[in-house]
Length: 429
Image (cartoon, rainbow, N blue to C red; front, side):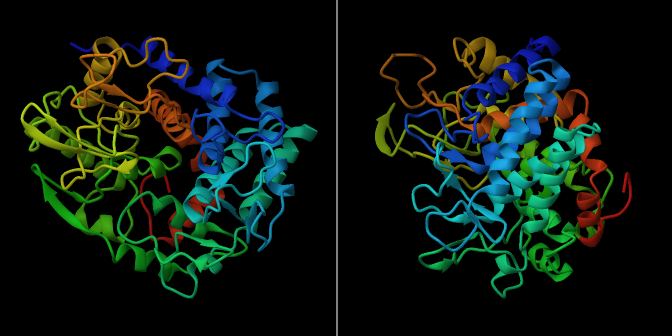
């Protein structure tokens, strides 16, 4: 029996959205990456906040006027912040540094100029540009700035003369060696890059990326492999892939939405199979993704030497897996497989009580195998909330309940154009 009701989903959605209400600098709109003291802002979390404000208005979590004010502050900050090769700028070539100082908005931690995190930021800006469509000075400015920010990104520069897009760039050392290759959340990045009216990626970039895919068979499912759950979710926050196909998916007879459904089921079956014999895994407890963990540490637990990790991209079926579960990542799979997701949410809400006394819904992760100082039978629980967890919870619950974000972004000409240049057709396209 499923105990999680629509009212409880709304409560979880509202609590998760409160992160963006309270963990944001209202002057510049920057959203803190993590609730730890003196932590910087994350541009990806800021993009997720921009996409969440329309949902909050429709759900009554935030007034329309407050959402306009917050959105405008955010977009103005990014448009006016310093763009250049200097090591303390906010961005360069229309892209932005992964982490920014919450107050000054300048680069933090000597981090990289991040192509993927910039994509999430720009997707959030485009969401705002579609939603705020009134003929008022403020909403016209939102549309103008969202458009200008997207048009400024120089996607071919980010290829660094290669076929695919690089992960990023640093003023001290140039482009990172890693490229977006192998199926993952970069699906959104390539579609945004292809849709640009000013500095578009060539169509060959998408073909080069798709050439690196791995089609696999696991736990009875044939699917396009990526290990962590978030890789099958983040692009789907903005794009409704139901019924549309590129050349690769046409050759397999499915679409990316169905692929994410299968990947979600692989996670479920992996937990039931439980190859590493964690006491808590099962049909009611699964969800491996990029998340915080209790490590680094090695402990003898019930006669088995276990290695535990800190922040890491955990994945299925090849690992790494130290028993850490991320309930937010299960919630973000609601649109794909509610029949197996809702029982996990039940377990996390009612049994482990991971939302009890938490301001922002689920804590990031928990690991019952790692003994907690509190003596809790549910083991270690992350002390933190992350913006990158709260946004997908808000937005994918909404896509499950109403599909409103998908409907909104179907009307974004840049996304539709990028999909078409990537070879997508069918369905709503």
